Image (cartoon, rainbow, N blue to C red; front, side, top):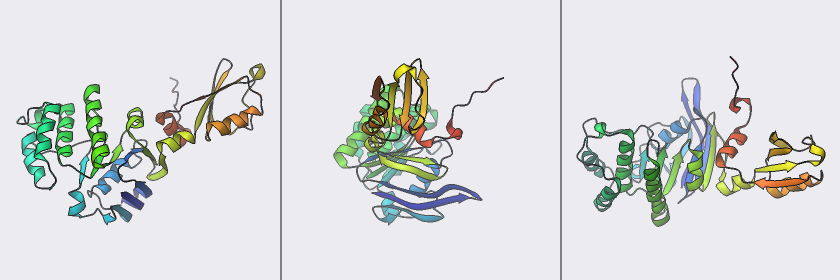
Length: 297
C-alpha cells in the first residue's frame, strides 16, 4: 500500500506540494488527476525517490521511499519523458535494468518481444516517441514490479497499442496483485481502468474516493418544469444549462436525493444521466479558474 501523509515539497517560495495526503490501496489502479501545475509530476518524483519531501511522509508498505533500495527494486516507473542512455538499444537497457531489479524476468522479456515487435538492437534515440514508450513498457513490465507508477503512460501510442498495454497492466493487477498509480489527462481512458481516483489541485488533494463513490455522489439530471419554468432558486445546483424547455442540472448528491428534491416542484420530466469522470473532474474543481472563457476580438 502507498501512503502519503502531509507531504510538502517547495521550490524556493513555491509549494508544489502543500500537505498532500492520499492512500493507494494494495492491488488497485489509482488515477491521479488534476490541472496542469497541480503537482502530479512532483508527487510522482517524490514517490519514486527522485525528490525528497521537505515535510510529511511518503511510504510504501510502511517503509520510507527515500534512499530505500529494497523498495526501489520493487517499484517501476514510466515518466512522461522516459530516460535512456543516448546510445543504448533496448537490449542494452535490458542488461542495465537487470542489475537493479532482482525480479527481472528474461522469460517475460522474450514473450513481450512478440507483443511489441521492435528491433531490440536498434538505438532507442532513433525510435519514434510511440515506439520509445512501447520499449519502456516492455522493459518495466519485465521487471515484474509490485508497484507500477505511470505518468501520462500511453501518450503517443496508437489506439490498438494503447489497448494492448492496458491489457498487460491490468493482467498484472489481476494475476500478481500489482498496485498501479497512474497520472493522466486522458480522463476517458482512466474511467475504464481505475477503481480509485484522487483529484489534486494547487498542491493539495481535493478529494479521493473510489470511482463508484464519485459517480454516486454527483448526478446529472435532465429536467422539464411545468409551463417551461426556470430552475427553482432553492435547488443546490452546481451547474445549469438549458436547451429549449430541457434543463440540464449538475448536483452534488445521489440521483435519488436529487429526484426527491425535484419532486416538490412537480416537474414534467426528470431523467438521471451518468456523469463521466471528465465531468466530475470539471465540476469538483469548479470556480472561475476552470470556466471556459470566451475571448472577443
